[in-house]
Image (cartoon, rainbow, N blue to C red; front, side, top):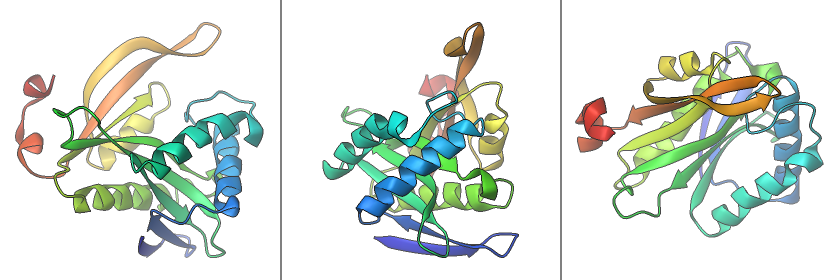
Length: 197
């Protein structure tokens, strides 16, 4: 477990912990966070309204993958040790794609958005991936029409693909599925977009 502490612009201390112990409190915190982010309009796999129990099956999938060492959790913790942000780094099983990881379920509690906690979480996730031997890049997808792609771009990611209308957020509400890429160094970061496709 590694820990990075930063102070956000509002002087609220947020610690970024890689591979925190999975306790009942951590699970409950993530369930509440996931519901709060979704209900505030966050694009994290659900549409509002949701309750913590609605997202439990998805969290369980992450937890199983963590137990099998296929996924690592980067958690943002507040001063009291509660989870206020998550990012899940997921390894590729395919032998030709083991040099990069997926980044899933990136979220920060709505009360901390715009205060630097999200940027700190993205930096901690990149640092954790970079520390993994052989990992040269991070890939993520996000929902179009939310503006989050601009946030990821400001963190160094670049758009490398887009599938129009691939996400149905509601009746008649179709959004683009945007793929973004962050080179961490090495040959993967030096390739052109055409070579990566």
